[in-house]
Image 1 (cartoon, one colour):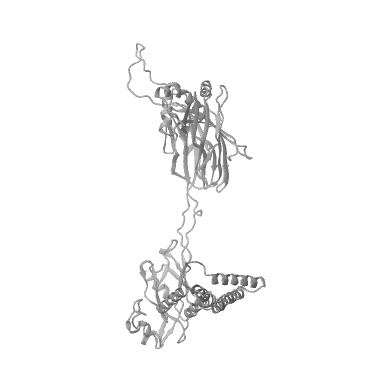
Image 2 (cartoon, rainbow, N blue to C red):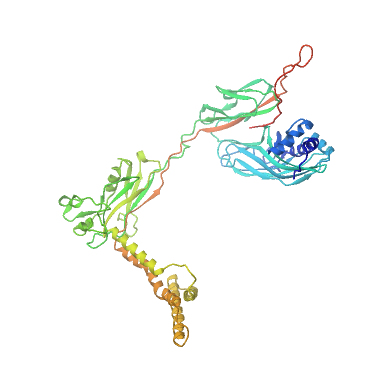
Length: 632
């Protein structure tokens, strides 16, 4: 816990704390595990700078600036990896796993050792970013806590954890693995004072650990994939990418597609007419620019679209008998548009003498079979024969809708009755032309006109459901003893029947009989007990017996009753989607990426600020801290 000390004391002791922290935090060296066959080892220096993650920590670091000359901790990180493939194909799996350890500037360690600092490091969290055509864009890891006693001349080591894992390449390009950052807590003890520093460390300059080139075999190539060039600090260098570095693949280059996909961390990179120009910063180092170019797509590499197909299934109990269930007509709906009636009936006198609708009155959901008056259905009870609908009827009705349109659907017969292969069981509705290769709204049944009318069936169903609910009651309240005993007898008899090879129906019947017998037995004993001087049979006992012996059989018969009632009415048409429509995915350009590494040599000379007489002039301005950032 950070103890309160005076500002004067804090100024006096912060230097040792910061030196120890510097020695510790700069241990962001990245080293990799043993390599796999064919992998190239990678070793790269990565500058890292650590700053306070909160205001209190940064205040402590600010106080140390007078002693160590900076309120930031600079670290040279050596990032190494030995088991990452340098090349891969599309959809290959790569085990991008690294072990991270750290060392720091030895000078700071030596100073910390002289001050007798003790450090405890905890809450280590490391982050590695993955860029390029990868199924994963980042990995996180947690390091192990450790205690460090700085010793002059000996590097301080820190375990930052194992980071990474499997990923899959998703396209052509370059997958890069990069140090994204580290956060940690350093608890320092110095001359009886304790300090807690929450630090966040970010890389500066190039943060690249390793890379894997993922190439579509037909894509353009960069030769070499990493083009290296030197330039003086503050100078300018140009690379003619289109003529000297990039070669076309199996399709022509798309010169206009050449672009910078990752800029350098310092300096300026620009592209003009295929030439990359880099204006170097004044600081020495290597600065990476990632560029991408594409070749024209292969014409056959796209994914074609899919035409949607929907199914209209006819009822399998429709009859043309006088008393048989039969539809008279129905309407379909697409979105908010409704078709005219698709007739499935014809008057016995023929459509010329008795055209439909009868008497010129169009059926609607309101006038067909109202609950409080005679409906239009009565006009269709006699003298009307069932006539199967045709694919042409369905097509014409749908094409008349403004959101379908003529020529945009194909309707064909379906024959899905194996016992009667010649029978038309429904229609396939395929969306074509203007409605091809896209997801379209589901065609739905809107109005349904039948004999007997569906409205009557709906009312019967509601009534049966209400009766069943009233008989069954609810399940609230404590369990009834007779019901509980009857259920146990039912289960035992059911299990015994199954064990003896009986069918499920036979086992259920045996269980139900056992339950009724048990309920009768219990209630009979209670009645006998009550007439021989015992307590009267309670309402609860009567209720339990009635539930098992009377109500349950009635409830069990409800599905059969409903099924029988349903058989008296024609089944509605059923609409569904059998093939979902999909838009085509056009062929994509074949793209590749390359890296231009510019090494800036030396540092540019600063303008002289001396006066002719050798004195330093008074200059207005501000102090700027040195910072380090990663290069992408």
